[in-house]
Amino acid sequence: MIELREVSRIFHVGGQEVRAMDRISLIIRPGEYVSIMGPSGSGKSTLLNILGLLDTPDQGHYLLEGQDVTSLSDGQLAEVRSRKIGFIFQFFHLIPRLSAQQNIELPLLLAGVARKQRTERSLPLLEAFGLADRRHHRPDELSGGQRQRVAIARAVINKPAVLLADEPTGNLDRHSSGEIIDLLEELNRGGLTLVIVTHDPDIGERAHRRIRVVDGTIASDSFR
Ligand code: ADP
Ligand code: MG
Image (cartoon, rainbow, N blue to C red; front, side):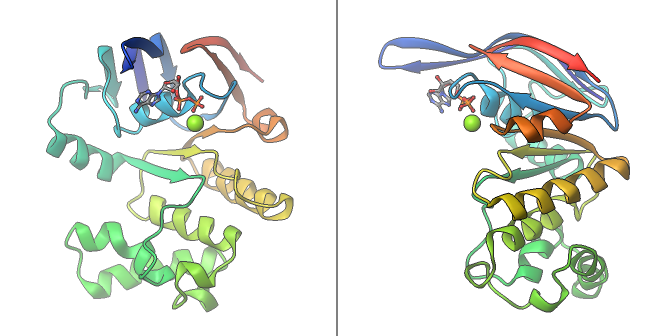
């Protein structure tokens, strides 16, 4: 379970104070499927980065599966992140010189998992995500949809509790977009907690819970 208690994130830009998150309290339960929508600059990415431990609150507390992660060191944050959190982005953030398979195995390589075990874990994912015949290709040899599938495989190979997606279809055509959302929803049906930031109302509507962020606050939070 994810719990934010009165979390604020404040940026200082040219002498001005920007409250990208303004005392946000939020509980997300295991297995939920949540969309986050709102105007550009309203604080969606900041919220997701905080949830994903890529950024830390200036005020308030963050409890992740009961553990207060608000004031962990960078090393501790990285450790919790690698065990519990998967993150995907609009521009995929793949390593250009690595193959699809090597990108997917990267979290395992960094965790010191041996080659044989890495392959045992990545091959079923490559297969399930329709990438088996592309496994030796580099990102620049893949379509946008395939790149995002590689990024999703990399994000879930460590079996995280939650998958956070920041505009995951923002750089994809309609068809690839649909495929990516189908894949994310399938992972959610398998029990993975899913939080998607999106501009696309059709995608936002599909979530079981829809949060609207305006000016660093939660303007609405509705279940279906
Ligand atoms: P969104 O994802 O909804 O477009 P962001 O979370 O990226 O919004 O940004 C929210 C506000 O915080 C914006 O006013 C943005 O300019 C500001 N902001 C975000 N990140 C930073 C940063 N690293 N430094 C300064 N200001 C930032
Ligand atoms: Mg954003």
